[in-house]
Image (cartoon, one colour):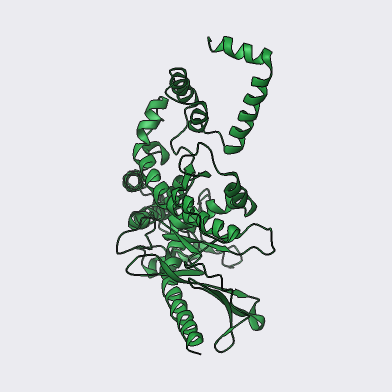
Length: 447
């Protein structure tokens, strides 16, 4: 009974913490989707404008997050001392569709500060363990303040709509996993999975963690005020374009009788739409127009804000197009991306460590025991810098020819996947077994 009460208490506590974080996550999600409310505009002005001018959102936040995510590609996992990726781990990775899901996990981590990966028992004996990526809108993990490791976690979701809706929650503890359904209170939906792992099978993928903020921060947290200002300036530009950039016309010496037909019926006053002709038979009427407004001040302000956003996100100047020319050479491209690439490499460290924890859990579920060798696992990432194939290939060939670099490492440096490298090894083996091809290879290599 005490154990059941402790489990129920943990579920209620974690569910409350999950709910407490939703407003902050919702704000970040709206900014990423470009659905945030417009700042700085008075309600009276917004009511007067109505639907004549819609809010203009320059979604630099999505652009920045995707610029980082595009450089976060996992290519395999390697044991310490091994020259190639582990085939078994990669098979589990692909069986769970993590080529695609890992991209979503990385993007949510960048945008919301964290995402999660949950590892579970296979559905049937002989199947691969189940690995799924999860949103922080549905999952919360509590940490032990001494070790800063996950001590308990909950996943909350709903099935059905309206009166048929059912609330579900799964509680993850170091030695058990149990699912609950809500009907006035949480009740167990079946027997617990007493896996006796000793660790919680939930791994956070955290962006920008700090010692006292282990759950991370959004990558564009600092850029939100700049984005608000840019959207305000862009919307003001549209309002000015509607009301001031097109010349405003005026007319004098008109009276109400000028707006009736010969039968005395009222007719429409002149339209203020562009392109309409204003005319009257009155000889005393005068027409004119006011000087139109120049929108260059808005252009310059938005350009300045783009520069600030680019600096905060470490994006090269040509990404947001506030410089006229693209980099003139491959070296110029790589130089302009130095800060961006370095930040991505830092994320390789944090995210790579999390994915290695996931693989250790996968091995535990597959073999039923912890593998000490898995402590030396290393995540293999694709090179985050912009590829300049010819230059890189030339450098790698020289290193191979001088004996500094082995062939397998050269293929990794050139960005070939593990499957491609495996096929190359098979081709090498076939070539060695064919004396004609072997002689030709020796001749090419100058042997």
